[in-house]
Length: 440
Image 1 (cartoon, rainbow, N blue to C red):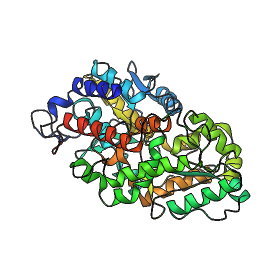
Image 2 (cartoon, helix red, strand yellow):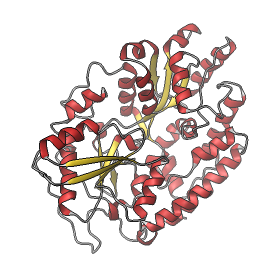
Image 3 (cartoon, rainbow, N blue to C red):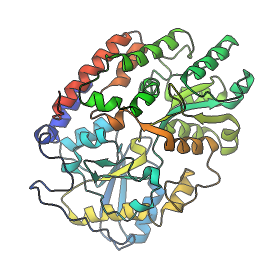
Image 4 (cartoon, rainbow, N blue to C red):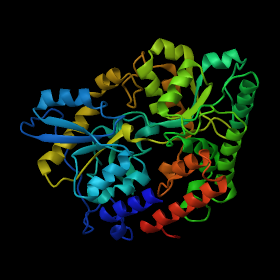
């Protein structure tokens, strides 16, 4: 609860509690006057003497490095990339609440996180950006928008929760086809365990990925409107849909289908275990694959690692754009720097974009820009799953409670599934009430 109280304090400080009951439409200024679209300068217009700051997390501080260097050379601007300590989102909110703002920042482009940073008050609108129509149709309006105003620029494929698996381990235990639903995946896991292998690997020591196990089980329900009901206080975390998903996660752990050190293992441990074949599967997002890319090459990854989305009834992926996928531009009060920030985004997603995805060796999110042939197959499979996917809790819920921390406590033996649900529901209600959500 200590982290929740800090979040509420930050929400208050950035103005959420005082503006929650007003019209949140991002297309108007505080007086209600309709705003005109911001001007978008030419990509390489001269910016001599302009200094920009970009905030990034530990896992995103190298993403913009080459683009920034090229932009500096072409425009004369200077860009400083500052690594903000983890937990990144909370650290950024605290800094913004104290009046400290960058020009740009990597930020999770979900509705709940745009609300958390009080986008209307703190962020520039990116409506009318020249790169919007370049996005692939499935991605164009999928994220980065709050109350009909675009506040975030997507730069890489949004993360998808699903199953990364070791092809060689599957073959070793006679599994020739990827599972077609959650029950089939569990059946394969039991086969692997019965033959002496480790089916799943969890990183409970780093905590944040524990929630993926619950969220993939909610994918079908999410498509049927689960989070709309939760947002209206018509369904709770303590009701069967979510509680049963928590209980099943715990039951799989109790059956011994995970690594023995599931409560203390780390993100680095998890990626190494899957790459080395010490475990068959891990439910994770795209940054997990990036970790394996840092330890391997495309040839080895294509040989060893595959990906499939999973849900109770099929192969529905769960989309959760993270902070490494998008940037926001802050209102700093300096018109020249604000325009320069927009210019940088325009350059990045304009003429610099083909070179950017080639240097990052990642999937293209733009029409007319091909994905490099060197991109590993599993990463492409992950991106392809977006077409049949649903938003995560972070995407579809009005606020984001500490589900992952509560689940990590469960793995550590400090909470039952029912306690996890009760605590998460209480946090959700408190946060929803703080931003003036009807029904709370």
